[in-house]
Image (cartoon, rainbow, N blue to C red; front, side, top):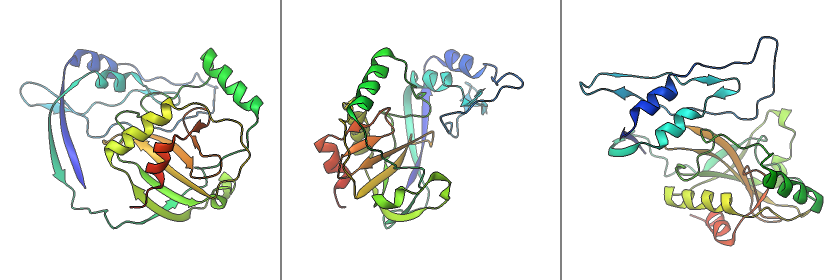
Length: 243
């Protein structure tokens, strides 16, 4: 495995402005349940023409981190990249730990699907911030596949179960996620799945952290992209290919 050092140039003033924002918080006495957990990009530095550098602090929001800086960074242009070996080799890692927090699928009705379509058309549904949900810049996906019965434990069970680990290439990962984002809502279904795969969406720098999961048989749906999405046949072939 390697860590990449990437140099970005462009409208640095816009990035500087995004990081210069005041952090936000809930008013005193106000509490809310936040939907997303997110990790910021790591190892980010501002460097001037003299080579002097400092690490900016990411401005906070009441539910984590503000989204504007990642959007400003996305507008920059990569001008150089170098790779550094970590000394860690994961080619022989075949086991993983799947959490009961990821992978639970429910039976759905035509009314559920109609309500999801209405929410999307009205733009009233929750939209994950781009910081927490990498799409085209997703890193290699590490899929942890377990029998479906093991992910039906309640979230407060506090247990993890062993599964088999499969790592997709970056090209495969980007193709899979883009296809699922563009896939149609899954129709109503009450079939049982025997295998479920789960993973986290992260960028190569470690930022992101969206939790997504896939039914590998049964209804063959993807969770974590708004409402359940139908897994296209070519994506299913990638997810189930034995390496």
